[in-house]
Length: 312
Length: 183
Image (cartoon, rainbow over all chains, first blue to last red; front, side):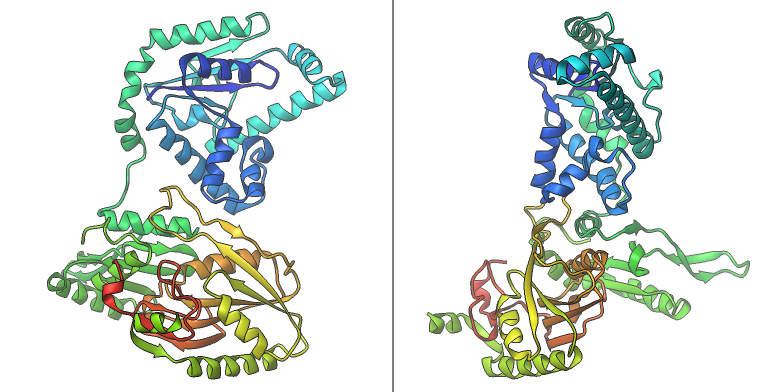
């Protein structure tokens, strides 16, 4: 699907441009309201939802859990949405999430500080001092947000296809420029490639769907894991080169625990059992839990997933 | 009604009498260990309801009762889901002695999440009391201070534990007849 990302300075008119563009092209507007709804649908409590948004956190939060959820969850929610709908993504690092996707057009809307202060005073009925402070704080928050979560400079023009200064150009003119760019780059045609792009941009590392499902369970319970992070040699030739090795599927970081999912049929388990016995002899200090076929099927049944996964 | 439910069982694993005796023993142990402390029992809904009610009455020291409910992973969970608190504790637990009351601990995944969020609130002590412990399914080992019964790899109902939200009010722990289970 086609994606338009709008990065904007406060008081630049970017919010209005994004909303009108979405309406005119019948794209879904991904803004604070929609994301709050999506986060709530994930079962997050309201204070967590508010704390997870860019204007609230500004990338300066101290809560590592929330940071991890933000980094993992919000981009996933947005890309999930992009697989189904044409989007106008307002802020939230859209230009970084869809960086390199040919079906995305990235626009940045800016204006001079004086003009933005004047507009904010008029729109919000605040005095000049308050408007200046608002501009400074918002610029800093958004700059830090992009730097913190994506390691990018929000003001680097290289991230955008269009940078529009609304000092002299009206909202209407800015929209026409973006519409023109959409046609010139054949955005709608290229947007059809989203499925393949998402697969290439976010490849799944897993060798088997059962491992992917297990990783999802761990993610759900916010348990930090690494996939096959370490290979343990089990046998060596005369020159000391490893001739046999074992790489447990998962490592649970906080519990210093390796997990091996062995969902093979019983007849195929013998060779693996021998490997695991050897592993335990050689590395008695390493904690390893092995889930055999029956254990794993019970685990899946507990979560109602048994029918989704075939045996490994 | 109770008669009908008993008929649905292939086996009674733990009788009503055995439960009552064990709950009394646990209550006595907890009363002794927490004597002079400010004890809060945090029941995990919905399964822990009956156990908490009986256990609280078997404890002889003053205590505060509270509840928490969190969402579980399941087929309805979206790919990017994270565990959510449906109902949080009403009590502030900072500097107080918290005892988490679970109906059953099996994988340890739910409990590890609960302990993480409770630990962050800095209670003066944090322990777990579970009615049932199904160790064979454990993924994450967590310290359990009090346990009612250790049970084998069988799906059980009763005394708070359900099958499709039914059988929680069965006064014993039993194994359902296989033909009554869809899976």
